[in-house]
Picture 1 (cartoon, one colour):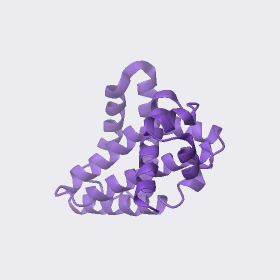
Picture 2 (tube, rainbow, N blue to C red; picture 1 turned 60 degrees about the vertical axis):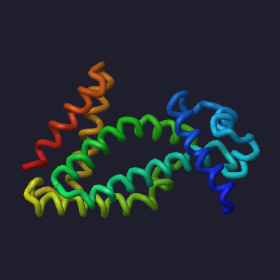
Picture 3 (cartoon, rainbow, N blue to C red; picture 1 turned 45 degrees about the vertical axis):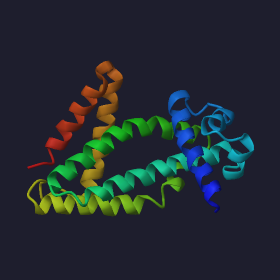
Picture 4 (cartoon, helix red, strand yellow; picture 1 turned 180 degrees about the vertical axis):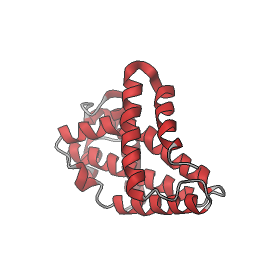
Length: 184
C-alpha cells in the first residue's frame, strides 16, 4: 500500500473511532470522511461498506488493547502491571460493550472479527499472570480462565455501577473489589 493511502486509512480509522464514539454507529460515513479530511470515495476505497469500517475500527481497538498489554510485560513491577492490565481492561470493556452491541446490530460478526487477536491477548494475559504470581503479587491458585471470568464479571459489575449513576468512580470501585480477591 502506498504511503499516502496508508495515511488516509489511518486517518479514516481515527476519525471513525471518534465520530462513532461521539455520535454512535448510526453516524453517516460522510461525517467520518469529512472528519478525516478525505472524500467519501476515498473512504469507500478502503472500506467498501459501513460495516467493514465498523469492523476495522473494532479490530484496531483490539490490536491496541493487545499492544498495551504486551507493553506491560516490560514493567519492573509484575504486580502493578497485572493490576494495570485488569483495571484497564475493565474500563475499556465498559466502553467496548456498547460498541459490540452496535456492531452486532449492524450485522458484524464480532466473534469472527476478534479471532486473530484473541490468542495474542490470551497469551499475554497468561504471561502477565505468571509473572505476577512468581513475584508473589497474585494468588497462585488463580488460572488464566479465572482471570478472564473475573474480568467479565468485574466489567458487568462496573457497567451496572456506572449505569446506576455512580459514574467512573463507582466503576473503578467495583473493579478494585474484584481485583482485591486476586491479589495477595
